[in-house]
Each structure stands twice: as C-alpha cells, then as structure tokens.
Image (cartoon, chains in turn green, purple):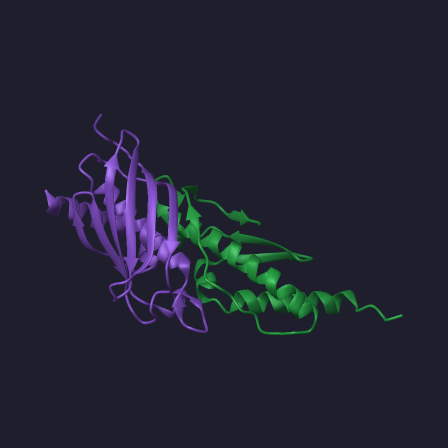
Length: 115
Length: 141
C-alpha cells in the first residue's frame, strides 16, 4: 500500500499553486483582493480601501471595483478548477482566460465572494 | 450650458477615489454624453503573458463614463449609483494604448437612467460594449 503524503506537504503544494495563480496578475494586487483556501474551496475577499470608493458621500464602493472583484473571483475560481487536477497530478504552470462581469452599488465595507 | 456640465462632470470624477486611482480623465462632456479615458499602466495588467489590461479596468472605466453621462443629463441634478451593468467583452485592449469609453444616457425616468457605452483602445474597433441602469437623484418630475 502506498504511503500517504504528509498533510503539510499537501497544504504547501496547494497554497503555492494558489499563490502562483493569483500572484501573477498585477490588477489583483492593485485592488487588494485576497484568497482564502479550505481544501479546494476558495473565498475571495476585497478588504476595504479608500482607493476603491466610488461615492465618498454615501459612502459606497465604485461599481467598477465591485465588478472587477466579481470578475477576479470568477476568473480565479475557474482557473483554480482547471489547474487543480493538473498540480495535484504534479504539473506546474497555470493558464488563464478573459472573462465577463456585472456590478451594482455596494456599501463601503469589506466584501466576500464565493462561487 | 455645456461648459457648466463639463465642469460638474470633472468635479464628479475628481471626487471619486477609485477614478483617481485609475488615473481616469474626462475628455468630453455633452448633455447626457461623456467620454473618459485612462492611460495604460503595468499596475492594471490582467494577463501577464500578453500585458493585456484586466477586464475589471474596462468595467471601471465604462461604469464611470456611464455615471458621468447620467450626471451630465439635463434631468439629473445630483449624483448617481450603478443599479445594473452588463458588458460584452469583444477583445483584449492593445497593451501600451490608452483606454477610452464613450457613454450616452438615452432615457431618464423619475428614478432610473438608462445608459449605453462602448470602450475602445487607440484603434477603431470596440474593446467592449456596455448597457446599464443608474439611479437618478434630483430628477424633475
């Protein structure tokens, strides 16, 4: 019987794959979107930042920032679903595609996104 | 009074932190119409292999141009917020080129403005097209 991999090795491999997927895209860093991983499940977070505000009086986030956040959450989730079986089988090198998005007004506060 | 509208529109953009963060500028404002643009920047890249801008940058520029078209409409006297926005992406914006958006507010009711917009790089073929609904503040009944 094959010896199971240590949990830490599995976690490191998956975290490294996620970091590779997310870290290569400058605009994700510009907006400040982060990803939390539980197994193969991802949760995207857009921490509140002044540069995301679209209406300072309400205050509300910019519809374009919310749209971009949704787009990034979808883009990374899709890339993750495609990449997951590859790196679990030992391959490296993610490939992403362009996507679509939609938006609405949102209160100026941290957001969470999940597929 | 197009000059007054243009001034209001520039103030509207200058007061938006996200528009400033993306270096957006107002190129032209007419009654219910707006043209905005932003410079290419490595910070806004979505595909590091090609250098193509992230779709979210296109979204943000279209959304802002559409909001500007709403506030410059004669029936609007206040701000606006996005209710609904859908976008067709047709191709990636050419790396290194400015991104430009033309928006037109073609219908205003008491509380909702309907807007369409198109994004271009420095070429004539569209990068993306948008249709949306925005809130109207201070509309005349």
